[in-house]
Amino acid sequence: MPRALAAATLTVVNGREVAAATVTVSAEAKTVRHAEPLASHAKAVLKLPKLKGCVVTIVATFEGGDASEVGDIDLCKVKLVRLTGLSRSLRGLSGSALMFEG
Image 1 (cartoon, one colour):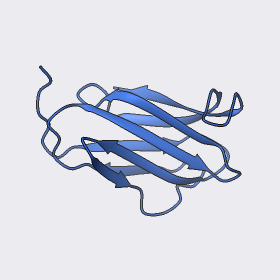
Image 2 (cartoon, helix red, strand yellow; image 1 turned 90 degrees about the vertical axis):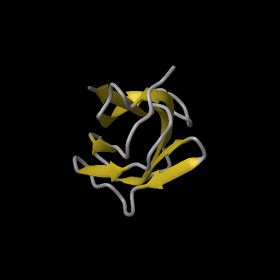
Image 3 (cartoon, helix red, strand yellow; image 1 turned 120 degrees about the vertical axis):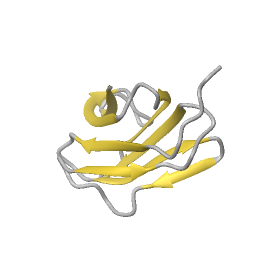
């Protein structure tokens, strides 16, 4: 059984050459969005609400229209997500990926 999380934070780093227009983290019908675009190579710390479990989904959209969605990210193990390029995305093979670091 997953352990409950107190209010947690997740660091998101934009490793792409273009700004992330939106970054959204969702879990258990709760959603947190980064308030403004995330510039190339910038980072943001998102404060998440208290969750019963550890699993979230991250969706990022980028200038130019690329978008990526990755689910089943375990916040009990992952504290940093790096947005990277050249992987499968919602639009095809040239979009972005998410790389996780514990």
